[in-house]
Amino acid sequence: MTSKLGNLFILAAPSGAGKSSLIKALLSREPDAQSNPKQVSVSHTTRAPRPGEVDGEHYHFVSREAFEALIEQQAFFEYAEVFGNYYGTSRITIEQTLHRGIDVFLDIDWQGARQVKALMPDTCGIFILPPSKPCLQERLEKRGQDEQSVIAKRMAEAVSEMSHYSEFDYVLVNDEFSATLQDLNSIVEAQRLRTAKQQARHQLLIDSLLSAE
Ligand code: 5GP
Image 1 (tube, rainbow, N blue to C red):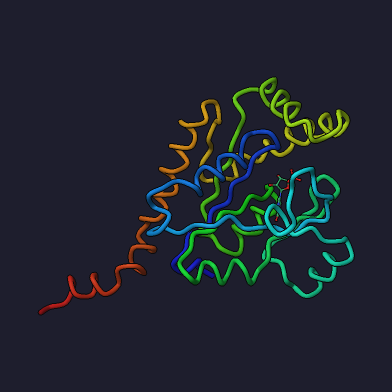
Image 2: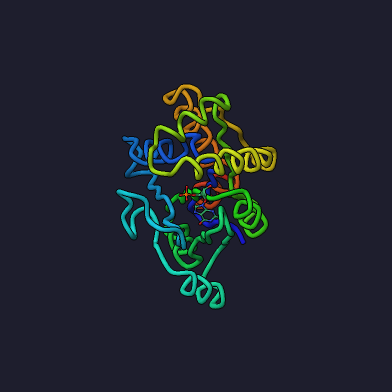
């Protein structure tokens, strides 16, 4: 399966690497919002909402039973168990959005990334690393949304997540936010200009340029 006109991107990172802020900044960048529409996929999860998180905006928060029913119905493009909770991407939403020519960004873990790459090999995988371990720890603590025990667990999980960096097409070290955002934007722009995408987008032009008349 190819991703039609829209491009599919995966952004993976350990918790605290700044992934969410980068996605948010990338999606709000002007002036290309009209000509190059993009969306971040809203996943389903069985984890409880954190303070400030809104159902349908940050995640679709569902029970374990509801999630398992969706697995049965093959409603997920990919899903995985991360930190003891299920997370999954809706199949129909992704397919419809890409079909409409909208770029989709998946904020998912390495397990989901593997599944997506197998289903759609032209997906662009990007891994974001923090500049150092102390910096990662500090970023997790600053959030203040999780208990200390949860932070310690997430630090351990971060090492495990980071060990998969080489499975991705691009690696960004998020030291200076605006520089990382610039690099991320460059990757997105380059992906849009890949030959297969340009062929689909400019088929009429290419046909006319190559015709004998
Ligand atoms: P958090 O609970 O901090 O929002 O997310 C925990 C981890 O789950 C992050 O690495 C995040 O990227 C990952 N995640 C979020 N949504 C999905 C999803 O739909 N599928 C997969 N495989 N991972 C997800």
